[in-house]
Image 1 (tube, rainbow, N blue to C red):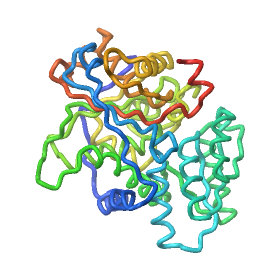
Image 2: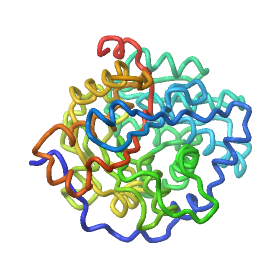
Image 3: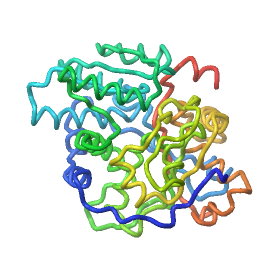
Image 4: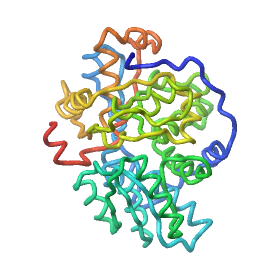
Length: 368
């Protein structure tokens, strides 16, 4: 089986609750009004562009977002603000996480003196757990994978009347994940936010790492709304061992991949795609590509030890996956079909995201 697939038969995305919530999002105004707000850097990798033979590579560096080393806090801060507008008496939030989402939620809740219960899967490292606990969250590690940990958190929240703030959605749980997706729109607007009827993106191709798909779908939705048929082509990148979107395309429906879930890309080590995300991905994703742990390690080193005058970037295992996907397509002849479909060549303007910094410092040190 190929390591990539091309999505030629895009399904029309009908208006629903997710569409409505995303359309009404004011996350950019919300975040920019806060005293903790900082706009993360958009860096140009000119030397790397020359090295691989494209016109430009831009990378949005989320490693310094609000001092939390990841973009995830954009979703949780916005979501709990909207939740508390409707339900101000909520005392305790709950979530399942592999690290970054839970840390973002704990930080956001601590800022407003709310309690947080966080469940993490069996493979979550002690360092990631301690990072969440720093913000007064109560963390429980379960002997389960990520997907089953989400189910457990959902059931516990119902029993104990906690508010579940999960970045994955399923039947009858869609509003809060859509609010989280709405919060992510802030950093896409930081890159390209037009009010003057400019309707062509600065970029030709975007490579997006993909876990449950909520963040990737929010990016797809933003570019579809802003640029319509002039939007960039969008490629989703997944680990071999946690490729829920890839296998869902193969089977024609959302499914949990039949993989080992044994990957260093903790932020992408997920199962069945989010229901909200899957609908958008089916319409707006152009291709899906699988990468190995070795691929992302190479990309991490490429960012940390840059050629020429490119800025050194500290990128975690999941953070470097977008670049890993780009390098894989460029450097391997067997991807000629995908390369041609994307029209990837010397005139291509590429956008990447460093979605996390060294969120697991011990692992990062070994790899670098």
